[in-house]
Amino acid sequence: MLNQTAEYALRAVIYVARDPSVSFRAADVATEIDAPRNYVAKILSQLARVGILESVRGPTGGFRLSAPPSTVRLADIIAVFRGTADQRCLLGHGICGSNPSCGAHRRWAPVAKTLDDFFADTTIADMLATRSFT
Image (cartoon, rainbow, N blue to C red; front, side, top):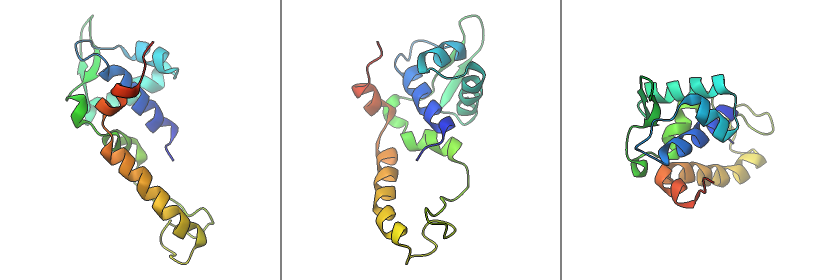
């Protein structure tokens, strides 16, 4: 469903968004989301390049959300790391959906749409409302 990078990105953004008054260092984010420090630093930098995060320099610098959490959709974050590759058919029929007679496609299409709708309709604010950071 999600590659490891997209999963780390979601977890990192949710963690950073919990306090808009603080800039979080990549090392601290990595520790909190239990991910490799260098990997998280690259992910955060990519998110800053596309404008989801803001990078703050200096001794108290780090990363923070660049827009209100209610305006950042999970789909926006995932899109940065999903790439351009089409989803492959579970049964090896090329790109998913290219063979409409595929039994897997007929059953998978509604599930895939539900997932896409979830990511498109869910914001960081929604995730913060249900996530505990203790």
